Image (cartoon, rainbow, N blue to C red; front, side):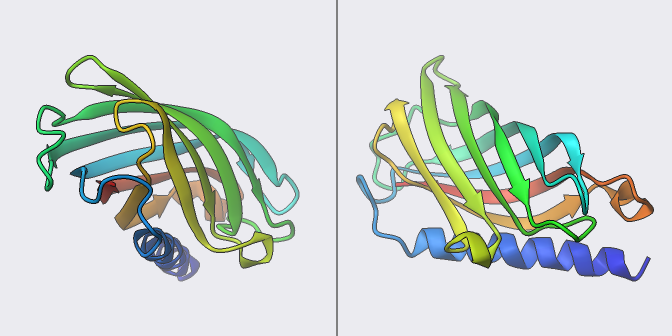
Length: 178
């Protein structure tokens, strides 16, 4: 079980690096439109293993306690989020967290309005820059970029028992839309 803490630490470091890279990117729209707390779960349709390196993904998330630093989005305080996409991981390593994930997410805001986000998450330095590239493509906040800072990321514990990487839970994160 000594490997499990290393996996959790690897996820946290990789995701924190992603968030740092994203937060230092130039803003695409007005700075500080919305800051929120977030939580999400990434579920892999087929578990990622040393030999199975691709899968579809289903992501369920929420953003809550949103505030609008620049005052332009005061009515947006929370959203339910559902995303689907695909993921590819590096072969040869069980419970591998070196992966590239692409997804399209639909936000349903507390106002009933909808937004769509196109996102790519990469933790594999051999596949390009580590980080997340996400942009609102339609609806509220269209043109805004998305930055996420996960405070904890937890892979399914059965991964080490040969079950494969089935999910990653992030119970607490900070999200910035600007």
